[in-house]
Length: 437
Image (tube, rainbow, N blue to C red):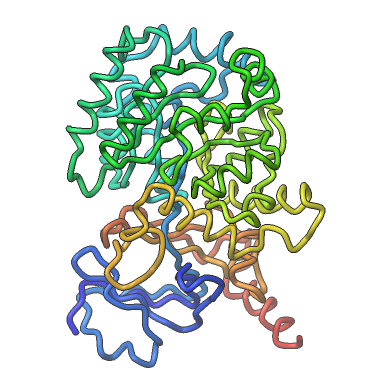
């Protein structure tokens, strides 16, 4: 069988089937797709134009970042040590009012794309003004993306009136119709910035075009209290009454969810995007994702924008999500390694209704994947590859990234990287003790 590329790593996490690590398997790539994941003993069946040996490395699907504001890379570090509303009202919205333009969005998104692909992120779900320019910046790195048909309840450089926001949202949907690389979500900013009538229109738009709804929900206690005071209902219940709580919903943050909220989301088949770094930096609280997962809610992981994170690092984000979930649940078995790696890949893909093409290493899916060197001094000896990828490795250990089978990142590291100790010497020491176990 002729293929373009054959990858020969030490380990593979295919994500589907869930919970397994394959030793000494190969990944065959052809025409931008996964042609096969097969035992190394069967590698001779593939006649590859290119063979990439990856000893000591683990390969898995590219991360699907379920919530970003890519252009905000140009606002990195703005407004530290503030609560959400102070941060938005005193820092972010005034600066955006001064800077917002298609060029600002394009250049910020281009910068974010470089950071994301180097961290193994091959697809991101973005919500921001000027979505066509967001897509232009992200696509120049090779990334896939979902961009929002964006709506917020005040005038901006993107649109001045409710009618203009709605019209432009429809234009964005039409512009990307049928695009394999760029999908669209319906993107109301949040329940506290969008009124009932507009939310009804956006719910109808989502249903009419069968598109996901990408919205910040339940991020702070103040949001919950404000919703009860103004609308007589918690945000989730209000959104349910307005027609937004359904299998297309991506409820971002979802920090302050009570039992009824969780039950409503689970029964609707909705997804939740967990953004732990942003939640911590803004002191928004601790999302009960273990309870949500046990209720059957699909969970994805998002970085949020760098202005509230302050980096686009899905490996670190997923690690933090796992650790926090265990602490919140007071249960070390909560948020297991494989469940969190699933959330960071297939969880995001499922939420975006893109899971037939991305999110796992299955035959026929897009060849979007990365390799990460585990046999480094910071993560050896390798006793549990999946756990050590999540808990020990960092984005600096990611050596290669492929999107649609094309190499977009290649970081060949020197073997002499340990201040006089060679990589092979470090491995020899680690393996000596590993073999005594």
